[in-house]
Length: 119
Image (cartoon, rainbow, N blue to C red; front, side, top):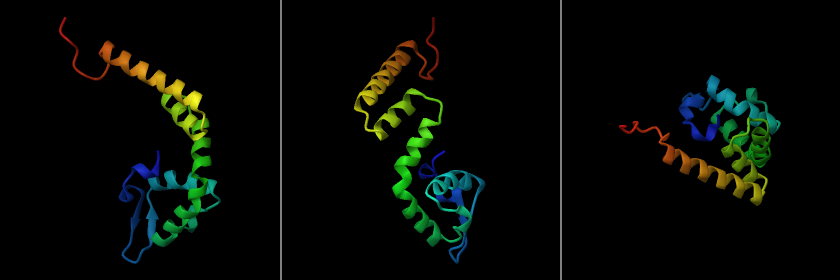
């Protein structure tokens, strides 16, 4: 799961004085990313610390995302994203063609989640 797609309230609780406490979900999202950048999440105690940690980790985002995608089961979507991260236009175009073909076949085959058509 990616922290950027979640609301702050799902990732941490913030006290009026700026101190934060990560939720289990927040810890599972931030700890590997910050760790990849050499940041110990246990030292991120305030909103200011979090902002500083996010800025410090940002230069590592590309490498971190690439590594995560390489270690995941390969789907067409993950291959397309990985190809984009690696600037591999041939692999990206190939994955994009596969996605379009799959989506076209899914619509023709009726597997788009709609009700079955009467026979």
